[in-house]
Length: 121
Image 1 (cartoon, rainbow, N blue to C red):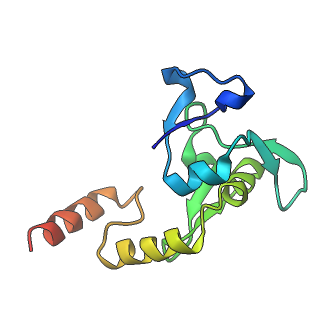
Image 2 (cartoon, helix red, strand yellow):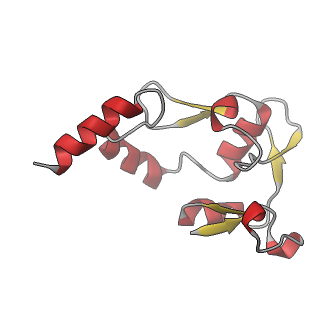
């Protein structure tokens, strides 16, 4: 679904620079939040903004590829606030890992090849 980075309730506009794709759960968990508390420092920080920040600067994948790990205050606060590792999505990622569809990133070339192999069976 299309999500407003700055929620309309907080004055966010419906224009390209303020829109981003989000899963239904992330959108619900985000609500009108624009910031959250980093669980390590206990400081309030802005949530990750995919229009202005690089994912790899704030997050990484767990070794098993099922969980998103925040590596900065912004990353950690975003993981918690949007519940990026809720049970439903972790279960889905487990299945995606099993068939070679996940995680994205450095192995994208290998994963793409594996996806094509699975899809052609």
